[in-house]
Each structure stands twice: as structure tokens, then as C-alpha cells.
Length: 460
Figure 1 (spheres, rainbow, N blue to C red):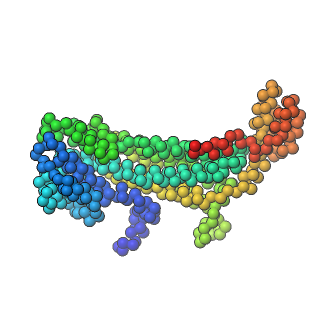
Figure 2 (figure 1 turned 90 degrees about the horizontal axis):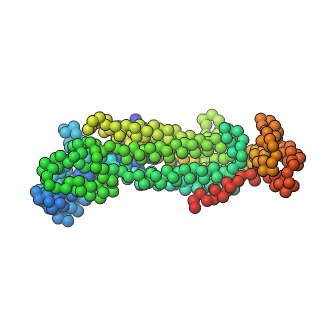
Figure 3 (figure 1 turned 135 degrees about the horizontal axis):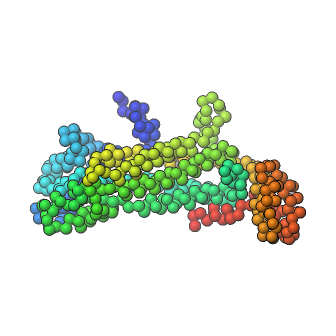
């Protein structure tokens, strides 16, 4: 099969139709990436053992040899990964294949050959895997996911400020309600996303390298007086992770679940946003910028569909389905270890991939929005009855009984209440003249409270 057809024959759209958009995640979640991170962890463990004076049987290596090990991990290539996979065909064990590849590679290097017996020393496969997956997820979060979220928040913040003072009819239960501003409604989303984004950035990923059942059994059988806990904790911290002292054979994945739960909250907020913007486009509050050559319908030439927001919503749902399963499944393992997490963990990138697709679509959609002032103003002009709220509130201020009921009689369910109807009602009220003047000067466009201020202050 020709290489150029690979996108056409991929089973998953992540690696097919959308491969160009999800490609940045390959450096963290591809099979190659997993093997590369395993090599990195094995190298770091080997270096740490060599540097420990108490472990006299392992030869101390020079700075030059340490640099050589670092270079080996940093420059690990696709061809190297293919060689590991070839070994795996015999071992039928992916981590053992990495160990054998590293051993065979170091045996060819004079200064490193003497320490090859300490590769994977006292480790179980999960010691290597949990650190690898934690580093993969941390890297994807910090370098790809968070920057995309920041971009969405930045775009929304710009729109919130731009439209801070643009009056808009609210709709509660789908019905006309007290006016707000377009900018304030976008600022609501900015506030929610900022809170979750900060939580996502602060969540720590845990790691362990404590042996087959978490007790350093093998380590102590070889070096019974050595402080293996401190040794392991130092290595894990140097990798940028948080040591976890209490584990079975596997790191319990609670930290991964916390990140996925936070991502699901972010995605849920974005589903809410995309549905609302879709609806605002539907009723004409937003227009969409037209791109030459694009088609909205195969039969209706006039169509300009809100496809970016629809794509975002669909992919956010897929992302949350996968992340939700992983969040619920990964922290559960029978007794000291079962292998159900192994195949599940390989799908982390798929869940994040659908999220990344959605973020890209959302950013694209936001960039194509144009406000339709006439539509916004027309809706407000048709809804003078929303001023029943301030009128009855002022009536209550001046002690008029049954104020709510009076306005209810005038407005509820009738529709078509005009400015003249409302003004006639206000003029006949038994309230001070200055209060009447204030109410008579009020319009649906002016009845927005502190919405503009809130929108303008969203980044302060």
C-alpha cells in the first residue's frame, strides 16, 4: 500500500482524516513515543544506580559516559524503536524488549558495557511504564493541551471585551428574560475555563519505582541496608513527578484520573459554549465570515453552516466518553495487579486527540464570528415586557402591595407589550415623580445591570 494512502486506510479518524491536526500528540502518545520514554526511564535509573556510592558493585561511570547515555535517550530514533519491536517479536514482552535493546546497545560501548547487568535492576515493568506514561501525559498537557486552552480563553476574552457593552436579550428556559450584554455572556465562559485551566496546570502526576509489589523486596535482597526509598524519590522528583509511597505493583493512576476528570469538566464547559454559540448563530445574533470556495450544502447554495461548533461539540463528546472510561477504569486493579490498565493506557492519546480536534475547531469557529447588531437590537425592541422586573421592583420599594401581581396581569403570556403600554402603566403609578422619570428613561437596551463592567473586568 503506498505511504501516501495511509490516511485513507486508517481505522481511526485520529490517524486518518484528522491526522494533520492531531499529529502534535504523536510525540507523546505514539508507540514510538512510549518506547522512547521507556528508554529514557531505564537510562535515568541506570545513571542513578551508578552515581550511588553505596552500590559498590556497579561501576561508576564518567561524565562523558553519562553524556553518552543522555544522548542515547535524547536521540532515540524510529529505527531504534523498530529494532525494539523486532526483539519484542521474540520476547512477547514490550518492556523486556526495551531492556534487551538497551543492553545490546551498551555492550558495544567500552565504558558502558560493564554496567549492563544493572539495566532494569530490581524493577518490574510497571516501574518503567508508570513513569513513562506520567511523563507522556505531563508533556502533552503542558506543551499542547494547556496552550490550546489558553488560546481559546484568549479568543473568548478578546470577544468579551469587544462586545462588553453590546446589549443582548437573555433567554431563561428559552424565553425572553432580563437583558445582559454579549460580552458578559462570553465572560462567564472565560471565568469558568480559567478556573479549570489553573486546576489542570497544578495537578501533579505521581510515579513509583518500588518493585514488584511496592515494597522494594528485590532491592533489599541485594542491598539490605541501602535507603531505596530516598533513592527512588530523588529519581522521580528529578523527572518532574511526585513520588507516591503506597502502591501495589502498579501506580494507582489516581493522578491520571484527576487530570482526565479536570479535562472532562473543561470539555463540558466547551460543549456548553459551542451549543450556545450555535444557537446564537441560528437566531441571527452572529453571522459567520465567508471563505471563498467553501460550500455549506451540496444542494442549497445559500447555506453557511456552523460546522466548526458542531464538529467541536461532537469531538468533545467523544473525548469525554474516552476520558471518562479511563478515569473510572484506571484506578481499579484486581489485588496487586491485573493487566486491564495496560491496553487502556494506550488510548490516552485518543481521548486527548479528540479533545485537541475540538479545541482547534472551536478556535477556528470563534475567528469566523461577526456580530449582527440589527438582530440583537430587534429582539430587544420586541421585548419591552422584560422591563416588568424593574418596574415591579421599584413599586415594591415604595410600598405598593401586589406589585408583582399587577405586572403579571399586564405582561405574563401576552407578548407584544409595547413601549407605550408600559409607559402608560408607569405614569399611573403612585410613586415619586423622580422614580417615574428613571423608569420612563429605561429601555431594554439600557437594562443590563453591571454586565458591561463584568465583561471588561474578566482579565483583571
